[in-house]
Image (spheres, rainbow, N blue to C red):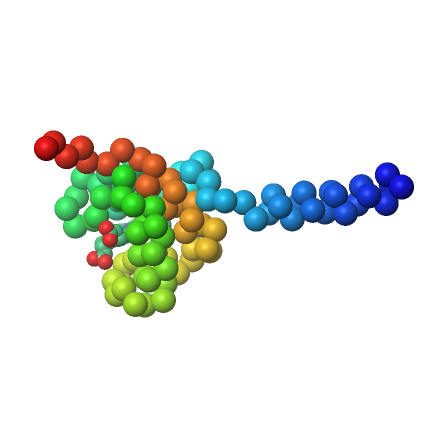
Length: 106
Ligand code: HEC
């Protein structure tokens, strides 16, 4: 009986682990190419390149999908977003969203 149960349980675990949620550490690893323009942790030092650090995670993911689809037009980011998978986008958005952005004094 145990023998017959093991296989479905293992395959379920494998399936569950492949459908992982957004992962900040994976996003950091994938952000190396972005750092050239957006800064090491998303804190760009150049006004031409928007600061991604601390930006809303959903907004970042939405923007990347929009560059892919062409609904947000920018030649540089269209090229950068083209190679990203849906999981890449979730991971990158989670990473940049979790970074410390500008501190606004009230
Ligand atoms: C060659 C320079 C360059 C690289 C490399 C680059 N970007 Fe960008 N990125 C830009 C520019 C320029 C803009 C502003 C485009 C616009 O006006 O829509 C931008 C905009 C964005 C935005 C929208 C920000 C906002 O505030 O609306 C996101 C999100 C973004 N980039 C993510 C990324 C990610 C993730 C990577 C790495 C996979 C990356 N970028 C790599 C130049 C770059």
